Image 1 (tube, one colour):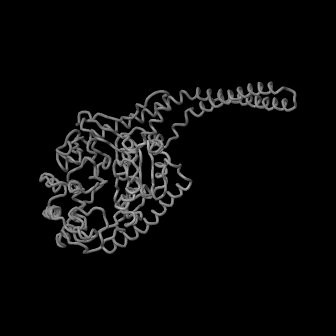
Image 2 (spheres, rainbow, N blue to C red):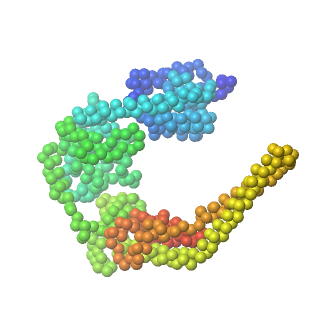
Image 3 (cartoon, helix red, strand yellow):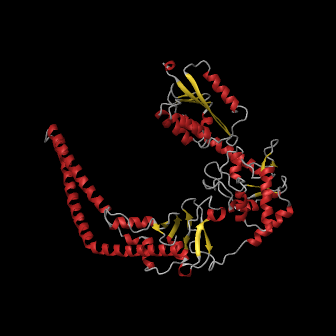
Length: 547
């Protein structure tokens, strides 16, 4: 029976020290040999491809080769998966069970775990399979704690345990826990420090590096073949920025000191940034790129150049709320010659200001234009809410009357339903006392059951109408706050902080305002205008003549 079926087989292999894989018995080579021995002489298996995840934990399925294997299954290229044992497949018992008991069977994929004696084609998974998966995960948790404790010990002794060395360094070929200088990148680091000490600002330094065609750290690592991804970098950013220069100038690694444990270690989920007091710093662990005198001068300059803003005069009321609609960078405030109404403040895309037009366009919007748009929109929203209040008052009598009618109908139906249920019970008693025949009993019972179901449906319909009745829409805290503002004559920082979530500026002279109360306002309009659309907020507002 089995020899008539041809299986395009995926050989899946995984190895990770983090979740306790034994270096000898679970090595890549040993897994391949075990699978090859198993397939020897089985002519109905055709090895389609080997999918190997070396250095990836089994506590989740975010692994490149595993993802590639799933894509080939979806494309119909693979209909059999073979592994050494269940733990090689995965140590997360929930997701492992999902793949084995639902995903593979639904797609007709045969699954074989050799040393666990599992073959989905020969027999159904036994009751112990979920327990095996739980033990695999618990084993991974226990090992993970031990591994993290070992990592902390290595960090405290100054050994490097990161996946990627800081820009300017690379791992020593002789000892992966030691760092050696990458001369090319180190030259760029020295240039950055020299320029800063000479008096160049961070934005200017970034611009000079971009003009010179020097690739930024993340691109440099990618070009050199590292599977590196900066989670804080926007996808569109492939150039030097202010923040990159700022981080380099403050990175103590360049002074020869090992700085680790900046993020918390977690078995699942994203690592979280640690407080600076929890960082592990060990001095003099590797060759310094920046000598002590240069480092100290740079740190002194960083402290002296830190500007304490006078919030009353320097901080824009829109600070932290403006975003470029194209590149995603924050907008920067710039002052120039006085324009409309004497205002000389304009906002520009931060990428354009810092790096030039080749990276983004100006997205210029004058402060007075932005203020007028938001002020007019808020006033229109508040006026609309006042109009709704009048509509609700006008319809209040009709709402009360409809509620009274519903309650009266509900009482009538409940009484009718109670009567039918008593009759249904009585007809059974008549049958039991042999006052009616069996056929008569079933006929009466069927009639009463139909009537009972009809009455229950009618009652349910009344309940739905009452549930959908308009609630006290003005009891919403955001609506109360908007009404409390009354007529907003002037915008200030407090109003912006309370009312606005984000302002997105586009190059086509359009602005998108996202309010903190947008969802509540939409619900208000839908409640007030049955079947109508929400037209009270300005999702896209033209910037008028002040582009």
